[in-house]
Amino acid sequence: MKKNLLLFTLLILTGFLGYMAFFWNGEPSEKGTINNPLFARFQVLASEGNSSCSGAFTDSISSMTDDSRIKGSCCSPMSWHRYEEQVEGLKKYKDISEIPPDPYDIDAELAKKLKSHYDDVLSEEEQKAYDYAMANSHEKGPCCCKCWRWYVYGGLAKFLIKEKGFGGEQITEVWNLSDGCGGEGDHVDHS
Image (cartoon, rainbow, N blue to C red; front, side):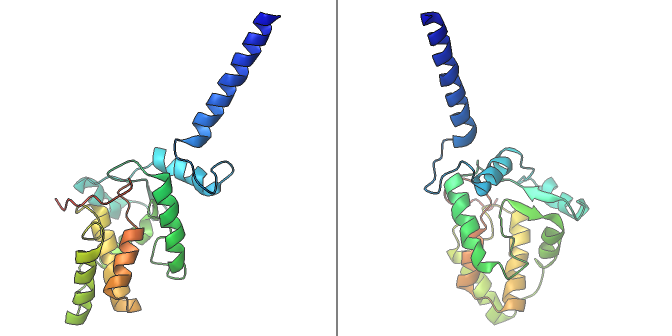
């Protein structure tokens, strides 16, 4: 009888620990994570990403099919707390279809379009807005290194400045909310 009770207790404890390991992921949230679709999305993006900082990946974007997606972080593991803040903050720009609503899940067709704007020439006044964002964003640019994000989000900035009249502070905010390096903070590198 005691042996059965001990086995039953061990079985329950093992099940509980397995459940916690699967759903908790070490980062609790005030909103909770169980039955939270955003947290479920975070877990998939954090574990099944295809994003990379390599130059080869930057070049390969043009050959991706339009229905492909660029997922996950490039430099550091994703942070649940930071991811939640970013997705919530980007909702402010939901009416501008060129701003990806999730910095860790970007449509390849949109990435190609934005990257094509990277070489756009800005007027002197427009360049001041871009330069302001370069000096004041967390990463001191569209990303911490000159990877695909640098060119895609640099192109996004030029598009937003030219077509939507964004100023430097707005570009800075978009870049900060769209930081896809992973982790909690900045990663200034620019190699």
